[in-house]
Length: 142
Ligand code: HEC
Ligand code: HEC
Image 1: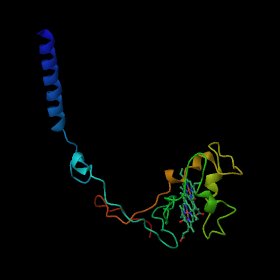
Image 2: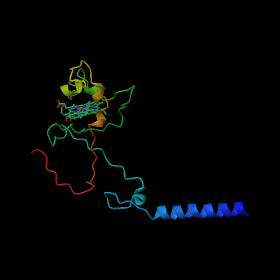
Image 3: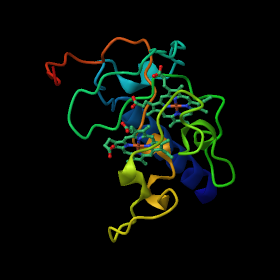
Image 4: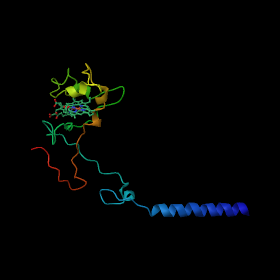
């Protein structure tokens, strides 16, 4: 009898917790509750911009003006370097990373890409054809 009572009490506690949790909703930047946003977002087209995307502030890592889904970037493979290495860039009609990418944390100039700059997409990002999430009044460089 006691066992049954314990199980019953436990199930009420769990049901109660579940109920309390479902009334707890966070608002996102889009204004909708997060649960309502769990649907997969529409696929957006990558913005391909010939001639590159202008920088909007000094020292900005330039945005990537092309798709990158076909270029592996992991410990074994580095898809970006096939076109953006110093040796290949000119042939591929683009630029190699600037000198800042060849300096270690102690300021020494290296002969190879610094490990601090290995994962390009830490700083450089592709763009999609999308609407801004919120109003933005930032004014970039002319
Ligand atoms: C098949 C060759 C190729 C590969 C691979 C490639 N890129 Fe590019 N990338 C280009 C070309 C060509 C441009 C110049 C596009 C233009 O100006 O129209 C460019 C431009 C860029 C720029 C803009 C540079 C600037 O000064 O505006 C960045 C940043 C960049 N790529 C990053 C990457 C990253 C990160 C990867 C890997 C995930 C990558 N690219 C892979 C060919 C490539
Ligand atoms: C820690 C951030 C960071 C990482 C990681 C990084 N970059 Fe950059 N990149 C920058 C910044 C900041 C600039 C602009 C200022 C400068 O040139 O130092 C830049 C500039 C560039 C440019 C423009 C060069 C020019 O002469 O105008 C290219 C091309 C580039 N990066 C490619 C790459 C590639 C390819 C990788 C990966 C191998 C990479 N970057 C990794 C921050 C980064």
